[in-house]
Length: 231
Image 1 (tube, rainbow, N blue to C red):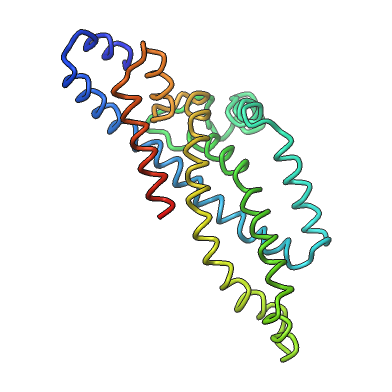
Image 2 (tube, rainbow, N blue to C red):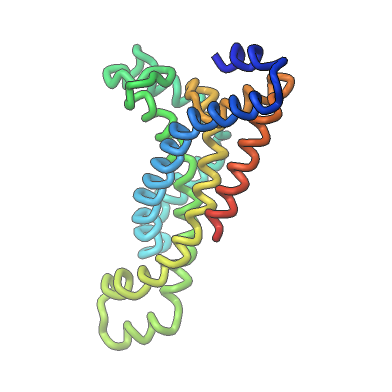
């Protein structure tokens, strides 16, 4: 285990400690990046169309349903939601027990990643919806849209040919923030679902006197990811 390996090299040279830290980071980074990338992908796959549908008819049925979803989402503390959904989705005696998702992550069983990824996507979607809805509504009231309507273009053509094309650029600029948010959220899901990723590695390293090389390595990695994401 990580604690045993840490104790084993506690009295070794500084170089050995940094070699161990690099090996631990390389081993744990893969699962964390997988969870983060899948979360970002599904967040935009679901949130983007939902935001467009809400912006087409502000105050309509879809818009009201979306606003209720956003309010409820923000009203529920993230940690409480994680623990609640863990029992709902993972309990073998629950309504989703037939899916065999499990209460904890098991290596070699991809389905055990479904509950934590679902929770992270669910909590990330409102931010995308709010941003996109506001942007689309602002664009629909702009001069070029009024000119397109005066030419007789249909609302669908205006929406999907002109407005949506302009929304893609700021959408791409917003992805880094979602990516960083997913990384931060992975700390909680890795601890709750016992996923051997960098989030739980950081927590464990801080609890071991602390393990300075691992903490330094993770700090540098997350700082670099943040800088590269916002380039």
